[in-house]
Image (tube, rainbow, N blue to C red; front, side):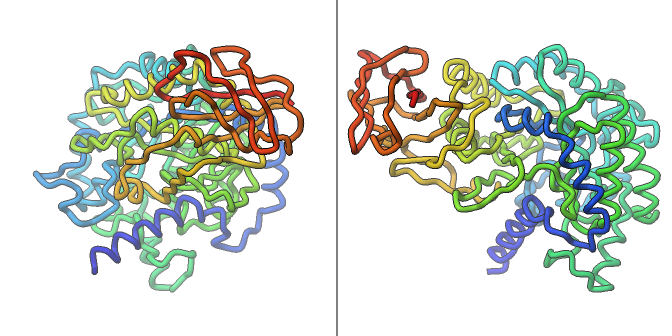
Length: 489
């Protein structure tokens, strides 16, 4: 029972962290100033809501152990979450011992151009990479810390700059992830202990969640902010101009003043950049609905939103996790999310050598082929008043939920997801069609349909009745991963 309780506690905490941080934790004294900045970013919001599909990259020193420390897997350590980038936390590795991994970090097979090309081939429109995760290690040339790829490793190449330049060449928009609050090397997690002692309620039942409780740095949290976090963010914003997304993470325990400072310094340097709600205290420009979480249709989201997902069940590279999402499952996630008006950012975790796992490459390219034919029904679309019809209903509420449930669903030819663009409606299937394609939501009630086509096949014969739109399937048309019916009202 204790293990089951712990699992549900971790799922609850992660969901609070991922989707609850737009809730105010401390008195918000800068809300009016934030609103002025927030509403000025319309051009970026318009781009973001049209982009729909992006690549996330989690990469750092944690790729070297790959989820195993001193012969034990993370699951055997019984200190979740079990995602590979948390191995320092899971194994309670002292800061000096973890830092030794930097001497081994020499990913000579890393090729930024090939990764950017993979994202492009996959049909993705933007890319966000971890510039510094919770372990405190930076993948860029930082002048305010020596715990970075240039100073601490034999690799001595600015990975963020290489990805930034590769994305520019490929026409992908670029963004960065930065763990602004949690830093197990330099973050002086006495903030967590201080809150426990003072019984400060930050909306989280475990106020020390994610903190370095085994070997915290001796400085104060404010010294970490002033000497590392704020200066590194300024470096990133000055070094890589024209970015679209800024992915702050794990803002629990932060004061309103601290969150506002992170927002304001980004706005002052790159006013166009939009910021995740994980900055905390209500200062996010767009919402993250949760890790591997699809919001229910009943949830009303008032800002642009994004679901982030993994290709297996870990963000960082995990050598023994082979529970890969198939192209059909990826399509389900993408279509389900887009039909509800959101974006899907799907993660890859390169190995310690800088290689993207082969299964990730193959599955992403397969989805890219589908999007090359059917992307009109995805990009720059809006939510229709109906998102789905058919018997198959799937819900996932966290990475742990997806790992526990697996994905063994059999979609039917009666399952359709819907999107809208101007006068056109799209019905998206991920199954082979029957001889007759029957779409109940396209009956006479929605208005007279004047034109019907199947994307990639052209105009088709149809009949619209009070019950459904009935489309004659072209002969020998059996696409393995489905198709799109486009109608004009």
